[in-house]
Length: 289
Image (tube, rainbow, N blue to C red):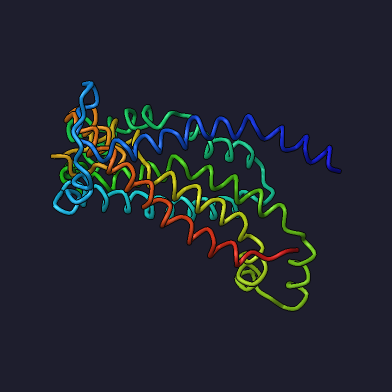
């Protein structure tokens, strides 16, 4: 047993090295840079202490980006999980063409988020956009879908949710097919209706799948970047930026590497503070069967 355990430990060394090289070391370097004023290119850096962090409290764009990030995270998670669960319940039934429908719903994930944003741009643009062309067929006035920062944020959230809903569907399909039929049959014999069966049998046994889907979608939504770049460019007037996109603009466009690193560290802790308690709360509600 000791030799086997030692062998298992040796097998984890490459993964540990990769984690140290690509996650821990860059994180430590980012923390170090966040205490300096630096343009990201020159050899000289000026020590600023916690000034980059105190500056956050006065930065309106930071708070707007934080609010947008929370909308992207929680909004996308809610829509993706509700839509994915409904699709999984429907596609878990036996009917002709269900495999084709599963493939169609899953296909958007296969497209790069940046490419998806580019495609959807031609749907939501004011002049010649697909959505407005459809509205004109019914003599409805064209809508400026990306008119304000809030409307742009909502459109990005909806498009991101639609693209990744298929991932939730696959997770929930796996969970539904892993539930033993004897529990559901016993509930039906006891006179339980479909809603009661779902509430008291299916939903509790589906908690492991819910945990995976919610945490995965929440992390993805909180660090959303690609779709925003392609669809809204953070506009209008940088009002639909996420924290990830704001970091990129500060570092490469505004050449404020120290301040960008400070926001990056804050973003890391925001994601951790949100996802860890939710993951723990859901884990406690998992049941064994």
